[in-house]
Length: 358
Image (cartoon, rainbow, N blue to C red; front, top):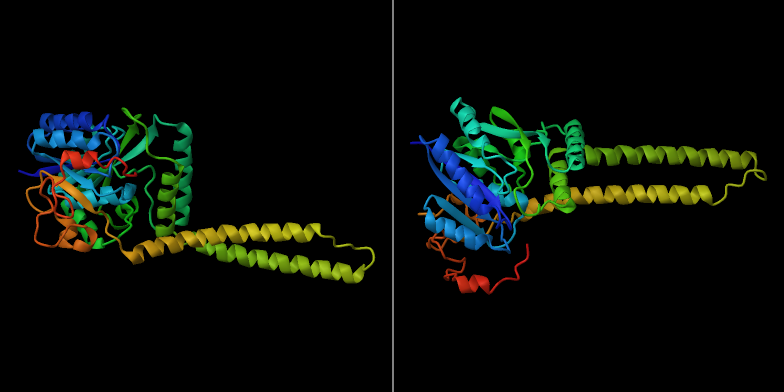
């Protein structure tokens, strides 16, 4: 019997983790009874009641598993790491807030049965803020024109990924993975499923301007050279224009020495303009350097604090400890209730650390 893994990353989703688990299990048992399944939550250091609820879910159903991160490792690393830990023949990645409709699961599986290694959901419309949807559309159109790699519009990462593609991800060894770009760049032949994105079922979205900016810059610095080329070309253009204007001023001053006061205004305007251009492109180059620095440091994708209902140590990036954060001392990092130091994490100890930052 083939096994379907459903991965649900979560952060402060106490209102949603129980309903989403019930909805996913309900649709799997009702519409896909011919498959075995596992439901894996990866919690990105939630500060609300999410973790106690996940413990209860895992205690009530051995097919529900949980990975607790030692801290918040970001919106890209945590889901990517979770994909590498599943044990099914395929993994379906969905968000916990119901904005990826669970009704997509049978449609994903049907196309997987037809031979597609990757089946992804594409938002054709959204019930969320129409302004944000329009801004995203503009961004996708812009990045597609500047990138040498195909960019998939309105793809959030939700989809089905075959075990064969998961092994490709495992071998990438990228400390700052951008799954949406990787699917377009290295993925197999894929099937796109259109859907309308509903509103969050409950709770408050964790996507703010800075998170969206991080996503945009990770995509921009990973898949385009346009920023650096633009800096080079625009710098050369400004240099030529400045030289031409300076030459004209010199000629006019020599020809009309007493009647052509140059004044300070053109000089100040030119200085402010060129200074702002320099600051802008220094910041842009800094984004590229920061991206390079993150990759060079090669930090682990995720450090696990605890995992529940995993019978054996997880794949941990194919046994590569430098990306997993699991200990190599022969202990079982997947044992429920074990911390990285090997000590037992009691409920009291977890409650004693409410000051963790997201």
